[in-house]
Length: 134
Length: 134
Image 1 (cartoon, rainbow over the protein chains, first blue to last red):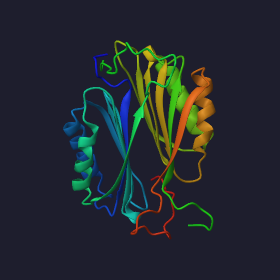
Image 2: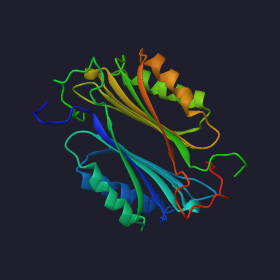
Image 3: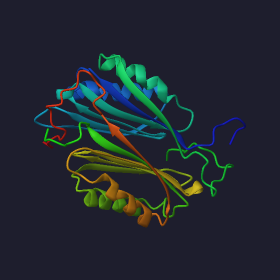
C-alpha cells in the first residue's frame, strides 16, 4: 500500500433521491448507471435491471471491477435508493451529480461509509486495496 | 400502509466479516447467497458472481423482488463486505448467522440503515412499501 493511502477496502455511498422523476423508465435508468460508472472511472463487468409491476419500480445492479452500484426505485413515492461501493482508483462521489441530473432532483441524502477500515486486528496493512479484473 | 408499519422503503444492512474463510470459493459463495435469500423469505430474481484474479476475490449480487444482496471478498485480508437491502415482509437480519457460519467467523460488524425514511416532505404515507415482482 502506498504511503498516505487509506487502509480500507472501499468507499460505500448510500444515496437517497427524493422528489425524483423518470423512476419508471428502465432504459433511462440503465443509461444513468452506465454514465455513473463512466464518470467514476470504474470498469463495468455486468449489468442487470428488472422492471416491477404494477407500480413501475425498477431495480438495477452494475457489477464493477471495483465493487458495484445498485438502484431501487419507488415511482409512486418519487423516491430512489442507490448505493455506490467502489474500491481502487475511482471517484464514487462523482456519481451523485449524475443521479441528481438524471432524476431531476436536488433533494438528495448522502451517507458515506468506509468499508473494511482497519479495525480488525488480523488485517494486513501491506495488502493493496485494488483488485484486478480477470 | 397498515397501522404500525414503519414508513420507510426498506432495511439496509452493511455487514463486514473479518477473519473469514472460504472467500475465494465462488461456488460456496453462490450457495451462501442463495441460502441467505431463502432464510430471509425473499424472492430471487437474478444472481451473478465474478471471480477476480490474481487474489481470488469474488464479487456477487443477488437481485431480489425485495431489493438485493451483494458480497465483495478480499481473501488476502480474510475480509468480506456484504450488504443486504430488503423491503416488504422479509427478515434481512436472519442472513447474518448464515454469513457467520458460511465464512467461519464471529468477527462481524453490522450497521443497519432505514432507507427511504419519511424525512421527505413530499412522501406519501398512504403508499405501501412492498413491490410486486412481474
